[in-house]
Amino acid sequence: MSSPPKPAPTSPSLPWRISSSLLMGVTGLASKFYLYGLSGVEVTGLAKFLSVLEARRDPEKRQRGLITVCNHISVVDDPLVWGVLPTSNIFDPSNLRWTLGAHDICFKNKFLANFFTCGQVLPAHRQKHSSFGGLFQPSITQAIRLLSSQPYSSSPSPQSSHDIPDPFSTGSLTFTTNGTDEVSAPSYYQRNRHSWVHVFPEGLVHQHPSRDLRYFKWGVARLILESEPAPDVLPMFIDGTHEIMPEHRTFPRFLPRISGKIHVAFGDVLDYEATFGDLRRRWQSLVQQSQSKLNNDNKGEVTPPMMLGELPDSLKHSQEAAEIRIEVARRMRDEVLKVRRSLGYPEPDARLGSAETWAVDEQTKEKKYKSRVDGSDINQD
Image 1 (cartoon, one colour):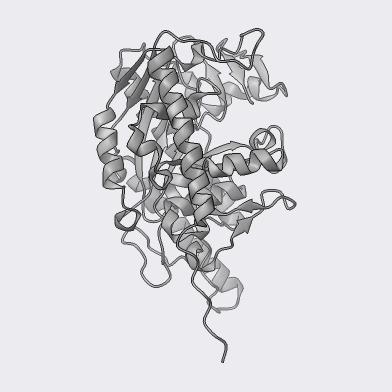
Image 2: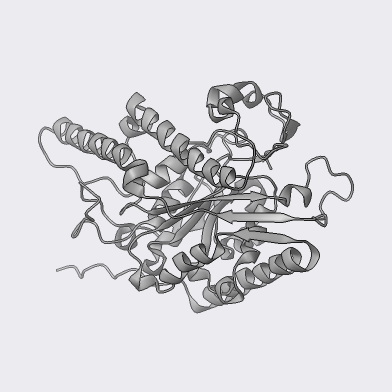
């Protein structure tokens, strides 16, 4: 009789945890020094956000993942904005964000790959510059798994209408983003369940004169719809960091400028059911239909449930799946705009929320350019 498989380690090795804690802590202190020592910073809603993080301090007691969603106006938005967190938070990587970073920049060599992995960054390919990009790439799968819990096959969550094998007992220690690289898989460790994932759904730096928002790309919809159980979702809005690294800056481009005022605003955790509940039910219905079709195609034999974060083609490219993702992304953008509106900014340009509006810009292969849509400075690095 074969022995049962060994359970996955609860957390990464001690040296890795120490390295991650030091790297994220020192980076947080440097960000704090820049915000409060070299610039001026105003923070709105911090107490509420800290109460959310405090309730998540013990990984074993978390009930769901956390997604924070924000506009993107500078290459230093992350990690700089997290300098507003107390020192006790920034040295606790188990309660700090995971995020996505450009594969061709943050992971272009082994040193940088180790550095950003310790900084809780997942490698993301930009579709405009890589055939491995898009919302179905493996790092999006990792982000979904980080937001989720386990095990599902034995005890599905109340929000889930189907059983899903958990990655914590069936996953791998590493994953590949392009078939040739090998990246540490953080979702392998049980302590990383119900993690916090931060995203910039505009997908690039967008320096608009009045901080208006581009349309949100649809990867954020996958995180909101496919994480199990349904995650907490919190909108944010930032301003001022565009003055630190303006896209029209001259030599030395690599040095940050001293900014007069930075504003970081945290919204409230959204009522998931009121905001996305109808779309989540539509999505789960599609998943059930897809699973039934797979069973039928196998002549009635029950096929194994889909792994969390992995989708068949029918759930990637069907018209209804696309419509659901577009609507989730639109509603999420509206929630970020509500935070922006609460700070007294002018009403947004409605046309900027449509992907079709930006088609004229999407044709350019340049990494830095002035948008032909709204005159904003764009940086795809």
